[in-house]
Amino acid sequence: MNIKDELSKISTNLVIDEKRANYKIIIDEPSKLIDVANSIKNLGFDHVVSVTGVDYPDKIEVIWHVSSYSSEELKGIDLAISMTVKKPEPLKQTDAQGNINVNRPPVTVPSLVSVWPSGIFSEREAFEMFGIIFDGHPDLRYLMLPEDFYGTWPLRKDFTYQKPKVFIE
Amino acid sequence: MSEKVYNIDDLQNINVEGEKYIILQIGPSHPGSGHMRLKVWLDGDIIVKVDPDIGFVHRTSEWLSERREWIKAVPIVERIMLPDTVHANLAYVLTVEKLLGIEPPPRAQYLRSLVAEINRITSHLYGIGIFGIFLGSSTVYMWAFGDREPFIDLMEMLTGARITTSYIIPGGVRWDLPNGFKERAETVLQYMERRLKDYEDIWVKNPVVQARTINVGTLKKEDAIRLGVVGPNLRASGVYYDTRKHHPYAAYSNLDFEVPTMKNGDSYDRLLIRVEEIKQSIKLIRQILKDIPEGKIIADQIYNQLNPVMKKNYEEKKRVMFPAFMIHMRPPAGEASAKVEAGRGEIFFYIKSTGDKYPYRFRWVTPSFRNLPYFTHVTVGHRLADLPTIYGSIDYFPPEADR
Image (cartoon, rainbow over the protein chains, first blue to last red):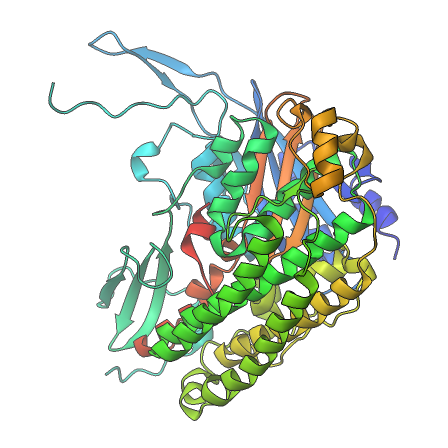
């Protein structure tokens, strides 16, 4: 099996890094994601290593890293599935004290837990850190952070740390 | 006692809403090997659902590393994986080297493998010791932690630090083999081989241990693949996968070693596989000390950056001091990922560089985080008294999972 041919059959947007033996499939349409993921799974990629986001000023790239335990030929290959979504404009609100609150809405992408159940915890982590809502995830709750972090999305580049307020002044 | 008979497969997606179960909170204050909370739904003493609530020791390592110079991430990743520092250090450095395009010289590769294998033994002894205390045996806990010391002393002799070594830097390693290291290592290895026999007598082949672990917490091969668990736990379920074989790094492509696998995937197999891997590591350390080639311990690109005083230091003491390059390092724009087989399993790094002073995106996944499905899928259907056995056998370390 020639992995390059098989992967280029699945998607025409294949980026190959020869030096580092890395493969990356770029998904341009969200509706194609689950179909592409299913055909990758049929090739033999059977588990998710990591789900994460990369934050850019106007967009977020969501990356699933998948690998294989069952296929002898694919064990040494790292495959990344990457999908980029546009970020909605942040909403600025001024409250009664005159503070400006910036509300940064989350983005939505399809979840791949139905294809690879091993991504269930990683997708929860990407949700709380980047504000990526995985549509179709069975249990999308906060994993590590407290619930009152909702809306801050700590790993986005525009996150600012709010110092705890002093109780006794 | 519950009168209902449960089938493990039916429990995987059980709905506990509106049902009358006892909810037991285990933790968050140090239930076993670190701070985490297990929320357990019980019918009688049968576990019907477990929800691991992690994050009590979340130390924002990704956030911190994205706001520091590249080299400053080394101490951060080490402090997350305390029993396994060398592997965290090595995985990060491998990723940075892929971005920089630097290849370390062969002697440095062997030294990396050497210190990694010493660290693997300490990590497995740590795991066996914690498993002992989970089953109520403080003897094996004291033994394992005591026998970890000679190996930590070896690391100290080689690197100058017991645990947080920061030994591996982009381009090579920081110290050469000291005088008398080979003889000292041979003594320690012979001692460990003797001790392994004692462990088998008192612990591994102990009928009490066997009664509490055999057929407890079984994860079948297909499920292990589906849930994506890693490391010795994966191999205990019978999957032949080891990052050292399938993504060779350091000197492992030149070394001859076996990857032990087991058949049943129960708690007992997860104990046995750690003992087997200690034996393989002993074999590897002997082989490395015999085959280690002569030569430089740092790549030429880094060596040329050293100033004359540092070069003199390198020639006389075989010590690599940090050139200014390290703090001003700006790897070219691009992305790289690397995998390393740590004591508990596979570490994965994904780093994106924009050619800046700091990493743009710093992502890493630790083995304990990927072993989380054990709590949700394997504990269900067992009695509550089996929960410590399963928790102990997977060698779970909360600070490592939370990062």
